[in-house]
Length: 541
Image (cartoon, rainbow, N blue to C red; front, side, top):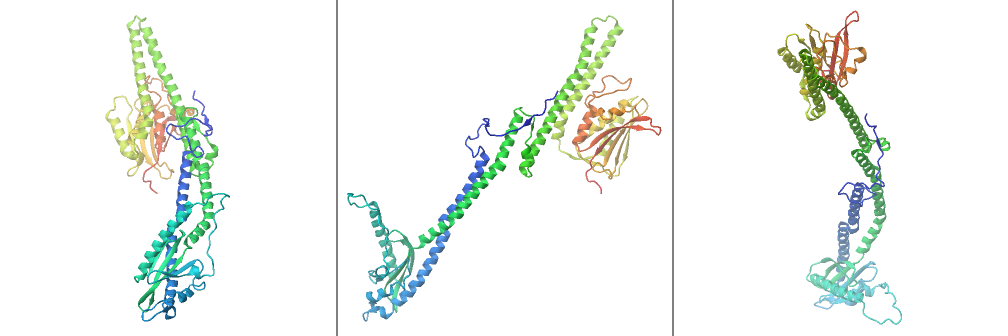
């Protein structure tokens, strides 16, 4: 008796069974969920890094700032080169007092610093010195009372930065004194990043000095942009985390449950997968759950069929074995030759029956594997029938039923399938019809095509003139090991598997096989008819 199909209600929570080689630490117990989270966070980190660095935007900002400073510096340099701001004849030089007046607040915007150097590179005017605005910096935190004064690390660092800044500024001034305008990005004495331009101050063609204009607001603008991006970055982070959580709940976790359910089936704790909450989903996960349930139900049904087949095989084999054992036990007790001959003939019949039974059982057990291995291809049924019937005509013995063929089709009748199994269908039907046909009568095989009969237009009929089939057994004849032979039929010549194999092969080709009785006008049974309906390749409209 087949086992009842169990339902696998699988979940991963609390399960200690883990396949080898998988890490124990996962996101919510899911390696796929961790992978999804890692990818989302990686893409987000790349976005954050790009937004925070702002290299391209910073480069554009620096270029725009240098261009703006260059325009202002050119205007101021032309003003400073005027005779009102120079002194001395015949070799003029910059007047420090008059030049300083140009650097007052209304000419130099807040956040910028302008300095004027003479032809020797000596500072003669600084906007920080003549401005009404007093630049300052926060005082350092107060030290506890009694703390000895000492030079701090910050003071040393500030002194080093000032030295480096003065050196960079000196190089810039020397290059400008040579007559070439300079635009650089460097550090100031306080260590801040500044955009600096230096232009030579000319009187006619003579270089009188250098005007340096600096702006240190680039970092502040970048910081402001970063701060403006932070709310969006936080929202993007929250969205990514939510997306990762939803993907884990609706993708990774259902896959884990399906995997756990499949493991339950593999271990034999269940016969089928059933997860109704997943199967009701109208997405790919639902499709996968329904496919797995259908697959496991099919496997369970096949296992039940194998169990029934094994039980039937054991029962069918036991009968001839029991007969053989009884005959062998009786053989030594029989003294008359006629009785011993009868027992010997009975033994031979049982051996033939057992041989036929084992052969058919072997063919039936290999059928599924053969059908799955062979690749379907177009098969011409008319040519296949002609070849098979020709073999029967060639090998016909006296007293055997003749086989007649009627091809009521025009052109090829093709079906997508396997010629070997289809040939076995035809041979089994013809052999079955011949075994029931009376002496002197024949078997008629016909092939016709009717495109009005739906998806199965090709029809193969095998008619015999035997006693027919009892109406209650028209479906039973296709069951395994069913046999009902007419009186006088050779014992053991049929195993009862032939028609079962026929139905299995026809179903694998997308067709159907039926059994009916042929009746005369008075309603009397004239014989049996088996009809195979198959789909057609290149069906005509």
